[in-house]
Image (cartoon, rainbow, N blue to C red):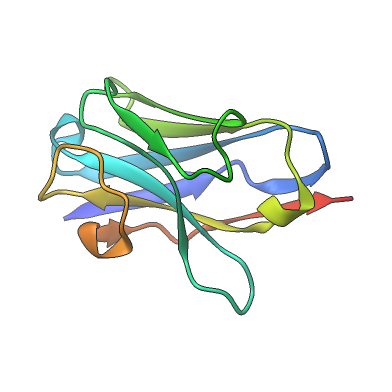
Amino acid sequence: QVQLVESGGGLVQAGGSLRLSCAASGRTFSNYAIGWFRQAPGRERNFVAAINWSGGSTYYADSVKGRFTISRDNAKNTVYLQMNSLKPEDTAVYYCAAAVREPGVVTTTRGYDYWGQGTQVTVSS
């Protein structure tokens, strides 16, 4: 079992920044990959970014590439998503997820086994 808790969401103006955190507990944190997804009202949950077990490999959706950075601190059992140059279209509930069957980068929702409860990010224009 893995428990995930997101934090750091909030309201920010366009062009601003936020840093989301995903704190994990349960299984050995350094054994699995972590991903971030987001879901806007009435829309499906979409991939944002992912990082492998060591932090040495990352992958981003085209819509956030160059603006968002995913990182992890295995000593703190935490993954971060630094979001810069935020746009109104980034508004969504952001979820982190753990892929315990796969230590590498995973980009699909079905590849993840555990999910957090989500944190709201709202970007005003």
